[in-house]
Image (cartoon, rainbow, N blue to C red; front, top):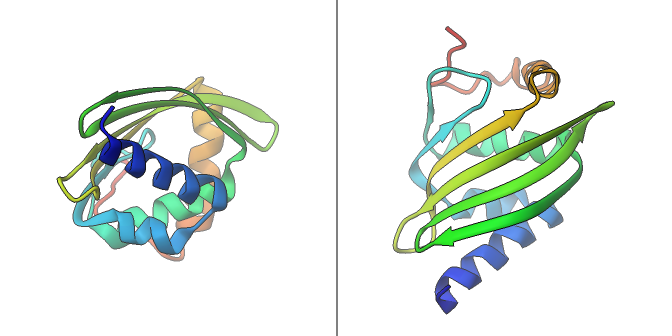
Length: 137
């Protein structure tokens, strides 16, 4: 992995484990696309993606990364976490631009009951904010 990619990954870890929502927003490209494991249509833009990811940082408990597969500007990061009493596993697929900003972020989560708990908790927290672009239909 090149040194610049290593720097971006280290920055990502500082954001996630330090819950640094300010630097999270700075690392997102203006036109970032976020694909949720729970919502059919993607979310578009920095504000909507920031709102979702900063809420997830609050919702996930015992979060840990286990495997990181890096291919240039493309990352596949396997994680585990808890939402309430339920454990889940997931994968973050992240693509960076040439400046190290996130331009695509897609999440996969299993098992289904963990995904349901995550979706319900996120919906309860985000309903007043309602980021645009996502639709459960």
